[in-house]
Image (cartoon, rainbow, N blue to C red; front, top):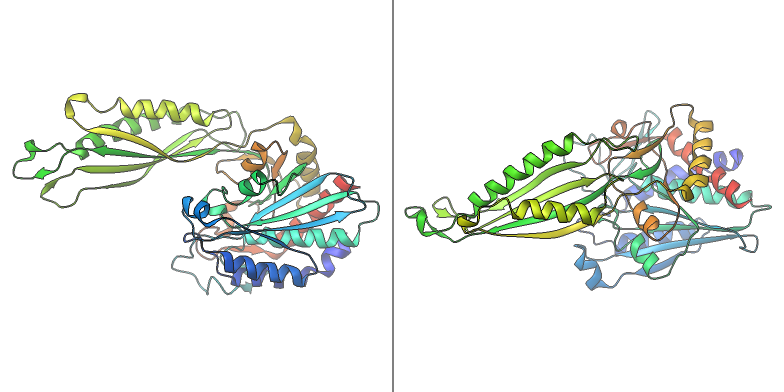
Length: 403
């Protein structure tokens, strides 16, 4: 396995450079063409690629334009063994300003590869695919199937990517490994609730504001209640290592039409991070009740709460133990004692596999800590040895599962 990884590593780096050069920003999420280009690259490596376009109305419902998901299936022996899904997404956030080089032309410098998606998450399309390629060279005595799921809505919640593939019955894996972002083996992560709060009043001229009903004044009461709730949440600690506790952020406030007009409508968008110990719908119900009772009735402002997104946490289960312990053992063998089994304070597509009853662990190419890589920031980069190491860890873990 060592030799197989080493022999194809130059090709793996070249493949990742090509992936970085394929534009796949999300938003806008218009990625049919990117899927076609990536499928071609994978086919050139000797794999068969299945393409599954998602119906346009469903894609647009989730704020994107075009999505085609890809599946590579590799059978070992007669296939009479476990099926392991490897999922990584190919969409990326926008590059932003301030890069030292073109973010969509991969650059290698100081044994690092720079470019948007170098860590999150095109690196794992490369690490998973080349782990699978190495596995094919060492396939004696293996039984089962490995699937690579390349999806295109990781930055938008995964609903038309892995969730859609699973709901359509296009994949029924026994285990899943989903894209990682550091040395850590992650078996739990936060969930997330996004709410929009609409405060509706009545417009009036600022010369006679008493003739109106000030939606912003209503929003003031909502904000006061939210920031009081944020302080309360800071006092709560999660039982899951790596996750501090629940968090609440007001991310967007919009409203008003002119300086001399009483605002008729104000919108507030909220991010509520959920710990693995919390149930999303219960916390949503409690937060909505808090918001709705925060505005005095006599103010005359109508308050409406709308769910924008609810991503349940990834929770620790005994069914994960086999995969967790195997990846942990392999990763420590490769990277040393700095590797840990952790929870993560963000949310990932792993939850979709877990919700489908699939034991799922988050692991892939990344640095010792996410902050080192510039992921989602400027000059995102990945060390070459971390790419090679992740490929080896995944390949040897798959080998042990299938032998």
